Image (cartoon, rainbow, N blue to C red; front, side, top):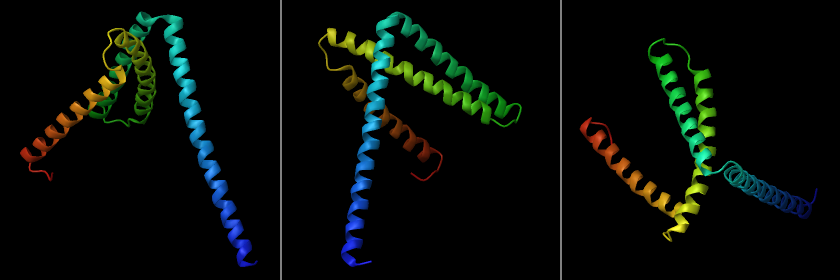
Length: 147
């Protein structure tokens, strides 16, 4: 095989890889857009009050799954894999409901003319992460752990 043929094949391989990456990214964006539409449809179909109640129920199910896993691990010394699967399922439910809560409160927040709800959440997260970082460093220092 000639050098120019190898170069053409390499260029074609790179082009195909780039197309594949674009397709994967496009599919991710499409999935996110489809999910967002489903969240909005759920809020519109069932109403914000009912979705808030369901969010509370899903959060309580996650709490129950977490406590069960801790209890099984510490008291009964049993394997926790089935409980971890349950936790994963409950986290998925909670994340779905959190997305719906963001839609509900985004609309309510906009009515008050403040910054977007997403910006407000982002600002709180930055503050909370900064506080957590400080607490971790303080804990490590107090317990003679490397910082």
